Length: 138
Ligand SMILES: [Zn+2]
Image (cartoon, rainbow, N blue to C red; front, side, top):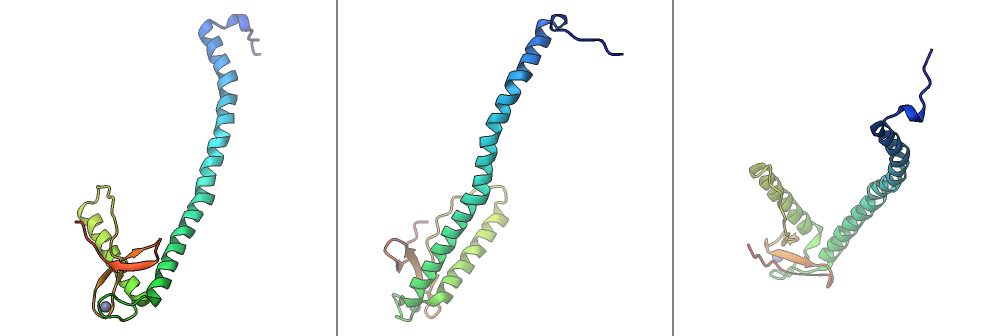
């Protein structure tokens, strides 16, 4: 047999807690829905858009490299030169992660193509869609 609980039997702390549950729980649920939708949008919409953007940028860079002559030896750079630069960049990142495993980096990539014939390093300018000699600040 259970004893009936009336509002008068509650003290002010219990009443406040009950009111908090009645008011705050629906508010939290209502606020949680946009947060959840935002999170899902970030994961399922924005992330793929970002990945497609990166893939598009890389595709365009490779396409420009296929038709762009090396600034030193005049041979076409080709996709191989972009692969060489990518490989070197990955190697550099791996080395940095190995050496400073708990550091956060801000890395500015300056070399986007390495001529497969003469080894000249080129930077890609996406707006002009050209390669220029690499300028290193570090
Ligand atoms: Zn060259």
